[in-house]
Each structure stands twice: as C-alpha cells, then as structure tokens.
Image (cartoon, rainbow, N blue to C red; front, side):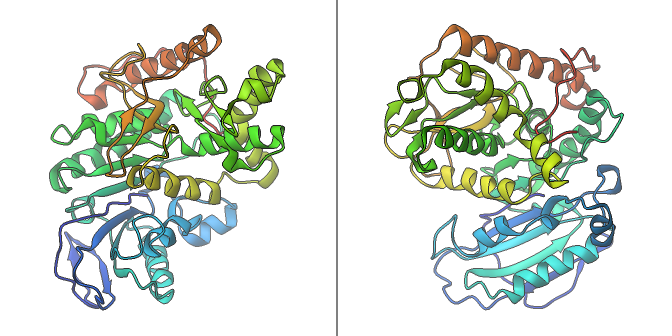
Length: 402
C-alpha cells in the first residue's frame, strides 16, 4: 500500500471520472472548507498486481487472508481524521491498486467518503504509480507478496524487489523532491534499499523500513513483565532487520525512567524469553488467529509517521529502518538498518549517538547486519550493482511467516 501525501496545492476536481494512462481511475472531492492550507495528498497502494499475490475481496474472504488496505483502514482513517498531521490540515488520499483490485479499491474509497471526515478533501484511485505518486510528499509502500509454502527467501527477495524497484523509479520521476517513504511490504529493509537505489534523485535519508511494530511489541512485553502500562516504557530500540534476527534492545530501554535491567533483574528472561518473543511474535499471532497482523500493523504505521511529524520527547527516541551510510555505530554502510532516531517534528530525523553497547547487544547486531548484507547481494541486479549472488546465512523467517 503506498501512501503518498503532502503534495503541492492543486485544484480539486469534484466527482469526475477520467483516465490514468489507458486505465480507469476515479476521483472524488469534498468541498474545501478551509482553503488557507495546502492539501496533503496521500497515495495508498491498496493492492498489488497478480505477481504480488493480492486477491480480490471475494477471494480474500474465502482464503481468510488479508492484504494491504483490505485488512484495515485504520491508517487511512487516522490520516483523514487529523490524527497524524493535525486538526487543521486537509488531506487528499490517492490509492494505488491494480486492474484486478480496482473494483474492491472503489469500495474502500466509498467507505472513506461515506465517513464524512471533515479533513478529507479528495479520494482518488488508480493503477498507474506515475499518476498516483505525482507530487507526493509521503508514500507508504505496503503491498507485497507474502511468503508461501516452499518459497525460498531468495526467491521472495527477487519477486518483491521487482515491485519496489518499479515504485522507486516512479517516485523518482514524479514525487515531491522531499518525499518521505515508509516501506512496509516484506522483506521491508531490503525492499527499502531497492526502492531508494532506484530513486537516485531523492534523498536516501528519506526512505524508511517499518520496524515500529517490532518496537511496540517489545514495549508491550516489557510492560507486561514489569506490571506497568506501556506508556511507561521509553528509549526502546529495535536494531537491524525486520526478521527473526532483529534485536530488541533492553540495555538502553527504560521503565519509568529507570534502566530496564534495574527493574527487571531476570537477565535470562531478557536475553532469551523477551528477545525470542519479540522476534517471533508475528508467527505466533498467525498460529493463534489464522492470519498475519493487520490492526497492529496499521497502528504502527500511524505511530511511525507521527514520530516524524511530532517532536520527540526530551531524552526519548524511536526505531525506524534507515540508510546506514554515515551512521555513528560502526554498522556496515549502504544497507537499511533499524536504529534509534529522534525528530524535531519536521519529517526529518537524526540518529541517537548516546547509546550504550555491550558484547551481547553488539553480537546480535552483527548477526542482523550479516543477514542484510547477504540480502543486498541477492538483489544486486535490482540496485544497479551487477549480478545477484545469494548466500543467505540461514533461512531466517520474517515476523509472521509460517
């Protein structure tokens, strides 16, 4: 799902139906009540082409699976209601689908329209990313093919990598020059790297891989163990890849302002139970519920965006997967790696320098780093770096894979 927004002001066309290239599109508008602020344009990649495995709504119901925007519209609702960008910022949502999903996408647009969000000025849908991404200032890239039985991870990297290479090219061609891109479709770290490599005219720093759900899961587990509410957990970092090599950092995290290890003295639980629970939470959820996370993923997308447009509380930070070149930790450059960040609320961020490191934490970080370097070699043909060579260090699973 691609959510591009914050585009330059543009005249709204009420109730018109036009063409996006050779394909049908649909555009609706709500009367602009407060014209003094430019409208944010949000393009949402609601469904993918057939190669990416997105199904029409009827087929999804039959398989009890959920893809992209069909899982939940919470993230769209949060944008339309002002929860992310504020109560005085009009929003235009632009939803990207495929020929196969266009009818279902119209249903999503109808739901949004019927909700009468006062800030939602326009909902437009289409299947051409060069149209949907035009002037986008935010892009959420969510749709990707899930890993099925017997599919090697290297094959999944190639299939989904092709999707994000094309989307990177489209963003490079038509999006705002300062577009912020959040990649959710897995494997999200390497997909984000592919996307940014195919968008050489855009700042590499503006590309993010979503690890906020992992951060939220880690906060939940610490809160449960300590017997506190989750808002008492701060300075939680997820290091590395969005896979089972990810590193939930209990060394730097705090509970009620105190180091976690002062509150939870069970080191074995922290190093084993806590870490493994966070790493494998998505898979356990599938076993219990029969589908991958939807609502919690949508919440984490909203959290990730809000962290970039709201000043980070003094002394705290948040996790996001970003480009490593120039990082202060000694992590290999030219990959996308989850690290601790702070923001002034302007959409930008800075890496946190004052973090502690011990042998246990660094050893886990290096393991995740090795996996991402190997993934990068697997997709070299998609990043303009020559022929691909896959030597993945073990077939690690993505959170939520079966």
